[in-house]
Length: 489
Picture 1 (cartoon, helix red, strand yellow):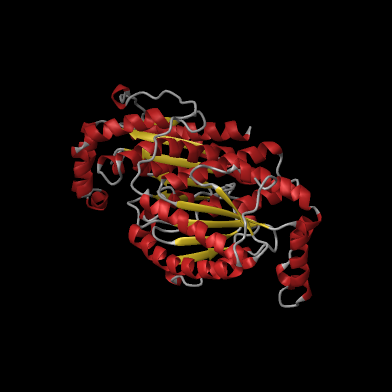
Picture 2 (cartoon, rainbow, N blue to C red):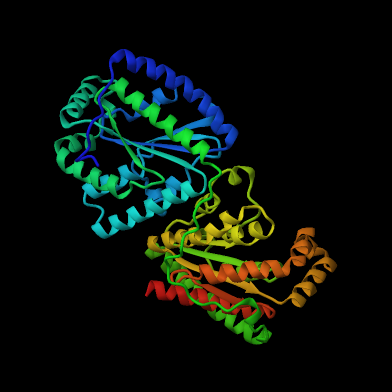
């Protein structure tokens, strides 16, 4: 892309000024249209050191309402960010519907720098590129407009700008050691940028090379690129997104109607097994922390199936400083205004820590599907998107354990009535629980499809037969300890 890039012919100075004024006025009206249509936009500016990314953002936002845009300069990842998945700081920074995020550098800058500094072996590079492609496509599929521009200057122009910045004590701080190194090794860096841009040039998020030698001309190219992409996105908002075929190997899971629920475990045997597995889990947690292995445990199941009691027996064995339980309810307004996976990316653990989700992203293909809170196209797409999300966690090195807690309809009714009749348990039963029970068959259909399409080899579903809570708790502990030992050993 960069190595065979051909410059556009630059217009006359007077024409550039006229077109910039027209484009700036148009951007004001487009910002209002974005807000009205709820279209979130990410403008990613990548490019050479001293190419003018920061000053270009300043010009782009000049006439915009500051309440509806944000500027982000990620820079190199902090030590805290290095303990999260590669995409964590980018996914958690995405804007709400109707708002614009301007990024002064991002995931391409990080990948190319790590590659050039020989911190990223080729296999890891390919994995990063795949993550980026999935990330960008998912943003596009879920209604985001991603506009990616690379500001191009030649070696001579870059050197001149770096020298000018260094000569002024008020701007010398803006010149990084890496910028100077980049200019010295310009040809090598050009090849690295070219490779990254080619590998991430997607139909849904193409790259635009901006001739940044002349600042006014660069400003005009950026403004007109943004306006063109925004206009196209506003026209195409209602177009349905293709449902993609699952590329991941799946593990067979029985249908709910085929699961036997007559397992028994006496209270005496339960206490012995509980003590044994909790001691083992406590020791494993120390090893997890030492080896910096992240763990994600997901609980889904019928209301009153015993998820809370099951989680309690797990956490009793864990160091409270090293885990967090996330009870997931209906999304808040600021969560609904973003990609549905955003609130789960925000809750991912650091390396060495455990995140336990009491309900999870699978609400998309259960509650949201059955209750009509999302379109059929959205929940059909979600099977593939959630597999990709979990593959990203697996590639990061996380242990992923997913439980479906199963009971029969009669057992649920018995537990509902017990909750209503027991004052200290009454808070656990709501009108919504009774309404959901009336849709048991619809939920069972949804759950069966979820289990069938998202039980991958790297994140399989485990069924906990919970008519007997003792049996389900011990089975969960046995599965967790087994998975952790397998990973650690």
